[in-house]
Length: 153
Image 1 (tube, one colour):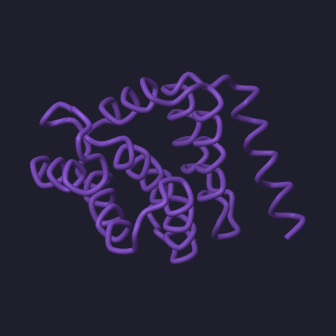
Image 2 (image 1 turned 30 degrees about the horizontal axis):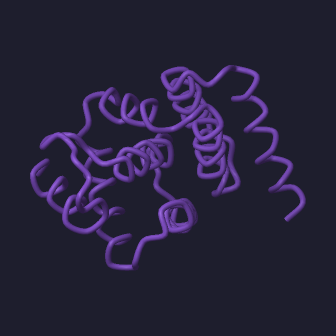
Image 3 (image 1 turned 120 degrees about the horizontal axis):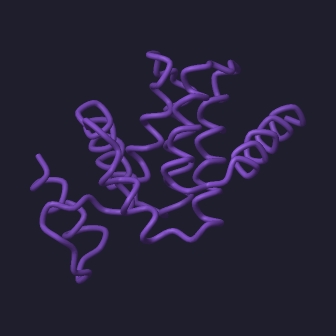
């Protein structure tokens, strides 16, 4: 499975970029972490999936077929991953602090897409924010920003 994932991103998304044979791509790492948040409450709502798709499209500017494949692979990775180390370390290596804060904000958006604040999703976001070395104040700021955006919609 890892070989097919790597081959997909090597051929289509990051052709010419040298990466380790078994390492996930930055796109897949981001998508897998976001899937992990969306399913943290043991219910993957259609609104969460639609928002995740839209955010990944906006972030990585992918063709529809590539986005479909990314969504499929990210779901598989989130379902089978034992831990988040490979994803978190890749993101920390390639995202600056502001980009990691934006990722946490995207996590909050997904978490609140179904109109509920579920404690399991909040716990997952908190844990991932810690692993991404996003400060607690920025974690809270991201949540408040999403709540404010949702209230004005």
